[in-house]
Length: 233
Image (cartoon, rainbow, N blue to C red):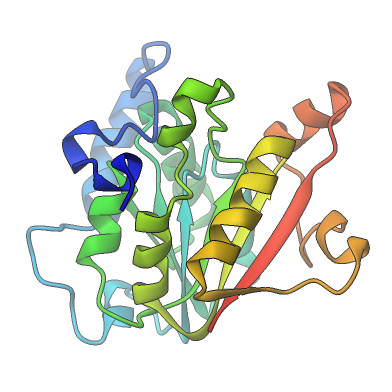
């Protein structure tokens, strides 16, 4: 095991700041009123079945790590109401945006966690998820910070444990070094099969993909994106 994989959670810094500009009074009220109803309580044991986290019947469970502004998460939740979505985002302003959209749309098939995603992953039961999405994660572009990238052997072990047999790990990024990093990490892990037969398979956005503000920024700055899909084996 490398020094990077040996590090404890106290030194795992997968995300940067927790807060941006101060929330307006109404935004803060939205956050404070809605968060308790949607927040997953890790101090309690996972319910059995895990689908009972949601007040509506769901057939599949999907986790999105770092949902940013929530555009993708809310789009998927409204488009596929039979899937239960768990969104992780430690950034307070982003959580407020998502909860506001939930309040506007009435989406009831979403639950959230507002801290380190590894804590939630360790809480989840074995083989409980159908899909994990890691979309435009922080690339930590400086080489000295690469150890902070979320894709690591340790976290791929976590993914492999909580995914059902044949479950999917979807990764999107506009940073070439992170795309290559992820391909290598998944190849070396041995528990994931990259689903791609030709370049179109990873250059074409996922079916039903809504463009996000991060993707739009990448396009403006001349960067193309890669959409990688791995199946648990």
